[in-house]
Length: 451
Ligand code: PHE
Image (tube, rainbow, N blue to C red):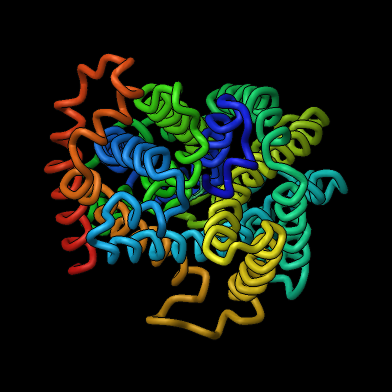
């Protein structure tokens, strides 16, 4: 029995945790700015293809492997391929990926937490409705010598406390109660954004594909974004898969999460792009896009905007929390399974390491901005590694494992809940897992890095 079983007792808890992992800053912060950077509509189209063709199949694969093996990634691969223990390395790579993603994720979550505070104090509301002061404010905020680091630490402590106090209740409540409120707020923001003057341009940008703008790098970024947003290709969903009870339908669970996650990303796009064009921001503005555009939208709403701003950034922080928790949970569970130590040891260890590294990445917007790797700041460098290098490699390994190494009968058995569910889609699933997904991952990855 794996150590994680202690964390989630109900089936709803496990599934909600997976939803909480998928929905986060990837949808609301990362998707709009990556989409903006690579040309809008064409990126969205490629992104959706990757999400449904590769991402959903990967999520099912991770659930299958995790639930079948009842172990954390390294042991899971070794258990299911007892004669080829080297597959454990794939699990290790996934866990290393989770480690780096968490370090980077803490930076963004720190910004979100900081913006909650700045909404409460009225600092954001005082910036007015023109692009320049709001952009300057974000630049100063992220480059400040200690404020982002302080908020990062506050956020990381929250993650640690929740992991230590029991993940289940908090995540269930969030996913059932707060997530719908977050979606409602995004819907209201969509309406506000769409009624701004000149909003149509933003919709055109998001929905009319201009393939001339889509580069090879953009296609690779779409793949990276699809994997990041669904939390696949790093072992997190594999760990959560081991919590999913035997009577739960893996196929419908994965599809449901994929659809919700994608809809929220698209809604975030509809809330952001019309405002980008209306308020005069640059759609390719990079990581600060959401942190600049949304305060501007809030400031067009008068006093209500202040309340909106507080609630929105608060809920965004909670959404980030459930994603960060999944990453720390994967690290903690793996560590305690291998070292037979108590959970708090691993949780504390990885909290300290990822927080320290996160602070370094955070400082690369200011104090450490002179340190460059291959011409990129530390943050941009880790962002590249986390989106276009590590997850696609892990994802490729995972689908190859499922499609070619795991016995077909085991996969069938797991997907059909030991023969109790009909799996009419199985032929298609198998075909994608064996041929389409590995080939697509390989082609996109090799051509992307060759550019
Ligand atoms: N999927 C999360 C998001 O969209 C980020 C994440 C990536 C969480 C990888 C866990 C693992 O914000």
